[in-house]
Length: 347
Image (cartoon, rainbow, N blue to C red; front, side, top):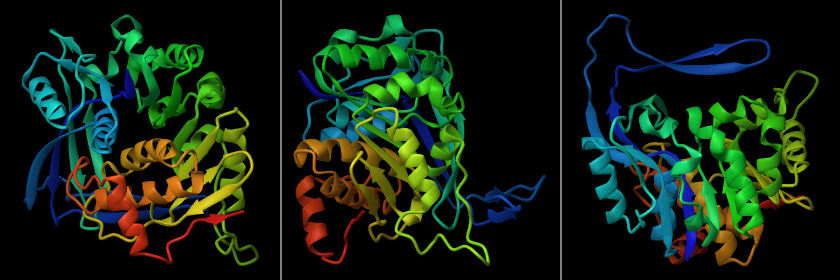
């Protein structure tokens, strides 16, 4: 019997930092975007380089195991150097690996993370085996014997298993927390209706929520100001539309602006917990998996769970690596005591 079983990607991440990277902002009438750029055709010096094990499924599993929950992970690797390294690191994190899928003729996932001087990143991802998970390869008995199923982003052909996973979990009384990922969300809200209807927790960032709901967040103008409101009305509309699918709690993350949530009765805005940002990689995985775990820890106190999740995510971004900086619940509680003014706004 597992407390949590996760399914998602597993990768070797190579972190590359170069002060030669420029941040270029491009604005239009309706949107504003930022890009990391390097001189075209140049040989660029690297200031630091480090490798680590990552991927949404593994980051969540490592965090949940660190929080003291009996955790297993379903992911697919190749029979190669990367795969063996991933497996070794996952075992060291205290995560059960009996449900790992191994392919002899495919390569494991690999990512190159380009870090900016601001702490943000651009990821160059080779999906490898992460994009080829088949329904027949999944141990459904293990899922049946878990209290929670945490679904991290599944890309490529692996996304085809989502409906079956959601239906199976629902039929067997397994709680579902899902962080779908932008690749799958491009298919639209209708594609996710069955999945979202069975989920206890749904987490996505603002850009993903906009993509799946077709709702744009309007900027302030000379005649209208939205930034003074506790929750932007367009984000409220996103939360309403996502909640209409019957998910129990929907969460939208918004980087430095914090986290928004809706449980059908109350709207919540949790600010970003103060932290010195080293790398934002893994912040979303830490926040969403900590929130699901905190619901268990707090007996479904959404407000307190958001605060705990924000604290743990802040600790992760203060460290170099998606699985660095995990806190225990006791450590999170202590940090909240040391920050008495940190509060969730509820409307």
